Amino acid sequence: MKIQSTDILKALSTVEDPDLKKDLVTLNMIKDIALTECKVSFTVVLTTPACPLKEKIRKDCEDAVEKVVPAGTLINIFMTSSVTSLRDNAPLLPGVKNIIAIASGKGGVGKSTVTTNLAVALAQSGASVGLIDADISGPSIPVMFNCEREQPEVKVVNGKNIIVPLQQYGVKLISIGFLAPPESAVVWRGPMASSALKQFISDADWGELDYLLIDLPPGTSDIHLTLVQTVPVTGAVIVTTPQKVALADAMKGLAMFKQPQINVPILGVVENMAYFTPEELPDNKYFIFGKDGGKNLAEKFGVPLLGQIPLVQSIRESGDSGLPVVMKEGATALAFRDLAENLARQVAIRNATFTTTKKVELTV
Image (cartoon, rainbow, N blue to C red; front, side, top):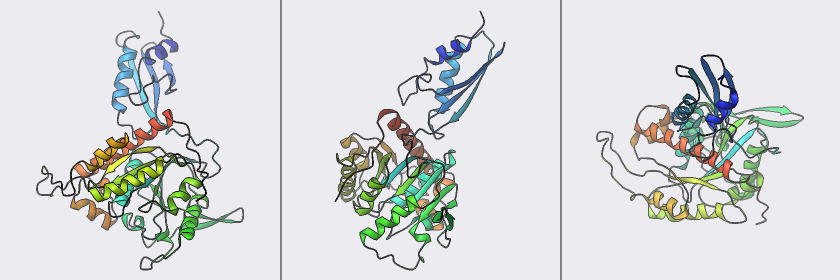
């Protein structure tokens, strides 16, 4: 009996996406089925290029199709991706699929370091990524991307000045640090800082992006409210160290996003500086700031632990030199790549599970 495309689809309807808990056919992830006498080919469209389960899905598809085709049939599976989004017809940032807030309760927990390496890791996976440095008074992104002396271009579109983000390591960037001399302090009241963030969002040419990361200042301030009132945020990532003081503040940051009137989904917690590993003793772990504090925070609030990043000298050196550690080889780079995969996975689950986040209508 001749095999039809419907037979292939029926076979693939038994393959489940491990994260989304639905079959690939229902999720519309199977495309371009082609059949000849001795060959079957089709495309699987993953929800992110950073999918950590790519090979498992490929193997499951192969096993399912082998059951319905004659022995010896060649099975060609092409893996591609299209990042999911719930931001249809958005007036602001229409080409941006997901807006992700990276927040921390207190300063000094390595939030900008995590954001930098996360952005570069997502870009390395094949995603299109942008990054807004919204920490107006302490912008770190220009140094970490080795472009603190550069300035973005400005173009005129329909009589309006539009900022063209800088591009470095495959990531589009905007920071107040590009617009003010590195030696000068930006001393602004809250409304001015909020106005700058709005401009970075509405008066910049971001184009098409899978992920736009917003590196927020520490705490819960005007900037945070401005963000959620300006655009619907896909979700928030909370960065903390295992230390009790950091956790107390991280809890407040997490609680802010979960407030009913704000209601931004928490994509997960990143435990930074989880342990110290000396370069000469790579198998040793010293829990300088305490153990599993971020993990316990995630469990307490019922949100994912996205990763535990070690405290190692190379991360600091890479940040200072402007060459993110994720661009190098080693265990630390792998930790950040795993973090990027876990974040991409949570975004896909969030987009398949929840309705779109609404802009916050809040007067404070």
